[in-house]
Length: 286
Image 1 (cartoon, helix red, strand yellow):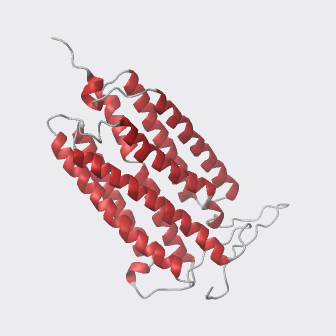
Image 2 (tube, rainbow, N blue to C red; image 1 turned 30 degrees about the vertical axis):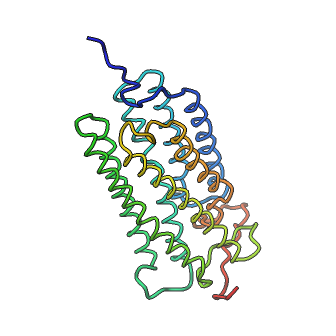
Image 3 (cartoon, one colour; image 1 turned 135 degrees about the vertical axis):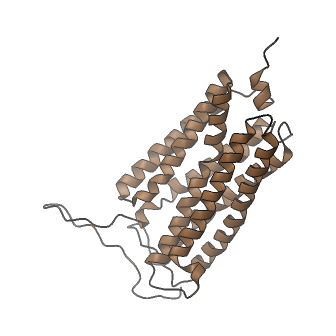
């Protein structure tokens, strides 16, 4: 009996092997640049989620390259999970950023949904739930018998993600608009307002890009295995690979680390004292 063509079975088309190589190089470059920025800025450790995510993306394209050369079930599963799940970690960074702004600002809102603990807990929980559903559904979709069930679970996970992305954007715009919320200034910032604009631009721009990517994924899964979107290789690289890399370009161009530095440790003899974080003394209207 003739063996089935696994490449056509899983991809439904003949994927190009040059595109994963380019993606690997770009995401590894982003990994290195982000690590260098975080180290130089002495940024807080939670920001290492960004280079870890870029590296996970690079691994996803390594598995895609291997799967293109020799398609196996294991490689296809690894490729699917590593390309589907890591971008969710970028949302965690954005949630943490807005939570930190609320926590470090002198203003204290009476609304529970604008407290740093709630922002961190609420959006972190939603992201973990979305990751779990997408991971479970992605795993089931690699099986012929469970493909339809897996698709529905992934769609639920993506729909939950879209809803909470929208809620988070509302929260971000509110923090952006309120002058009482402030951000630690870096040496290149001309004012606290400019510092906040930079940070929240990064948060909003990358969240919008993640939102667009999730819309593409919903359309892809809703269209079904073997559908026009699923079978279009250009659509995957345009609406997943490129969009996620654009988000990394924003993180690299407007780095968050200079605004969230690690707490000062015991001074070392002979070392220069680091400049203190600069906050406005009191809320001002700009």
